[in-house]
Length: 159
Image 1 (tube, rainbow, N blue to C red):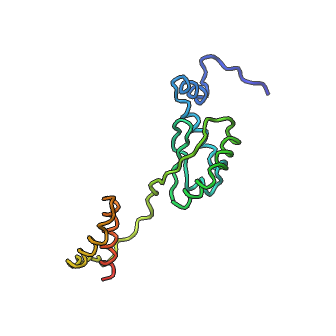
Image 2 (cartoon, one colour):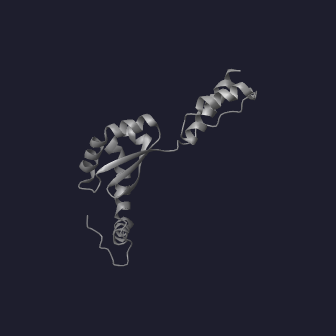
Image 3 (cartoon, rainbow, N blue to C red):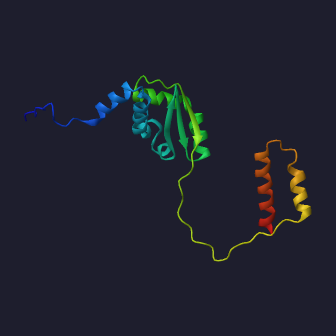
């Protein structure tokens, strides 16, 4: 077979031209992120690739989103192995650390509406007082509010 001669005005692959332009614009980290995303299943394995994704690169840090806390803990535990795999797969890349964050989980299946709507009864003044006193020592207002809501819902669910 003979090789077709390309004319200067013929179509060229877009990827090399795009990579060159991104490098000129100082956006080489986007190219690296694209390579990481493509190689991610090889780097972390099929199971972890289904629950995690390289999100961005800032400086020498790779930010990875993970869908479940247990998988995030697993990735954090094996961070040095992950970095070795990245360098083995992509060569000498400027990534020295990985940072893992919990991602919003994808929406699940639509569940049918329950036939009977459960209505929660309000707490008695004594129960409200116990919630307030029991959480008064929690300094962080956001955490205190979360604990109070959980406490109230626990009592209401028991009724």
